[in-house]
Image (cartoon, rainbow, N blue to C red; front, side, top):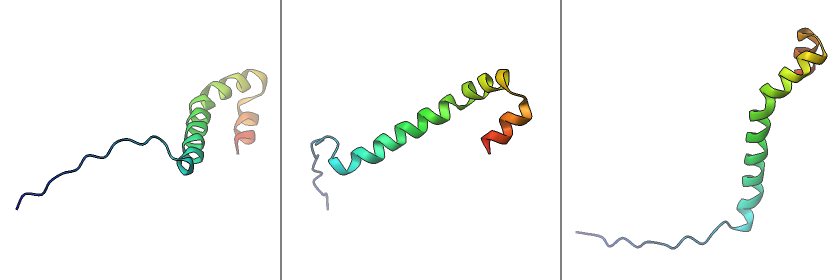
Amino acid sequence: MQEDLKLERFQGISPEQIIPLIALLVSAFAHATTPILITISVHEMSVNSTMFNRL
């Protein structure tokens, strides 16, 4: 009752997986840079203005 396991070779990224991967990387970059951009904007505007503009 032992089944044979077959290993499949990695074929790379298919074309239909490229757009979601790029979207994931862009969104991760946007979330990572948000605290830096908020810190910069607080120096230019008040805290209330910055939070209002974030909405």
